[in-house]
Image (cartoon, rainbow, N blue to C red; front, side, top):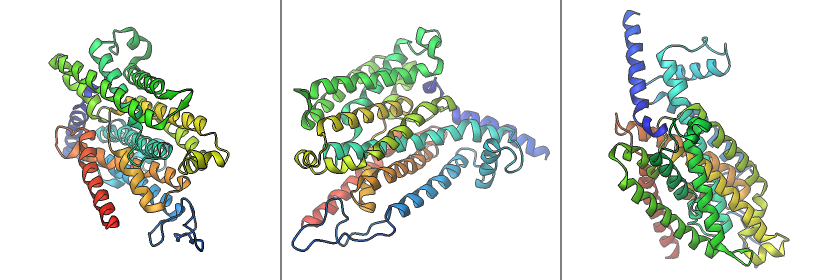
Length: 401
């Protein structure tokens, strides 16, 4: 199980490096511009504020895509065993496109690159993209800059589902779930927990068939707090041998990632991100408020239900393989809006790329800052998130003055 392999990445790399050492011993818009202000009126909705610097959509997407591609290869080379960038690229190219470089990769370093680090780095990018894009959507749907997908209880529910499966033995190899689903039994348990808590939040938030945003936020906070309390009680009551694995789901991490962990969340995140982007115009309308959106012909209640439901599924899929990782869904959309403005046709793709880039480097820090142990990713994102929001608060105060 993933939780039982918290230190296996370092151990496997050290063993492989030892074998390698022994062998070696023998031998958007076209350009950023300000929106014109109509005479006697306010700037048009979603337009950049006068005097604010903005990147074009194509420039932001291209820059982030390039940075992400380079970062993926660089991150694979970083760890207890350092591997040069060119060598990492050669191994990946030969593995995916045979004959592209020097030949089929073999040996202990190839095991480190292709079987240990590469799936982990790619999963980190998927997790970051999923959290960031759902954060941007939730902030638009709820018209609240502090909203994030965890408000719907999916993260807390996933942690509770995973901890229950771990400590009850339901995800073990000898259980019925383990015999049916194998290594997927634990992520499926976490996903089921996420969907159960989301269903409870929706049930509490409904009023006459309508989705009230205030009730949704309050219900989400209450259900998440209840799930976290139950999870904490179970963890504290668990045997010491199982304590570390249970804590993984409350703090988040990517240790022990295998290729089998990657495919389901990748498919969900890519599909959800594409679907969200096709609804970017509806999100822009929701920012105008319920009356404004309705006047434009938007069926507000139905659109909200669908967007929030897809957010819940996406977050459930992501958290089921990474545990609870906070602040990414809050930080990235804020930073993106400062760069490209408030149009969700721009915000969504740039947020996805920015979240992926952030998570790749946060994971590098998690495995390198406290060797040979790892720091939970949720701890690092919290350390980054606190000063980020203090800086936002200071910036807001200066504008007020």
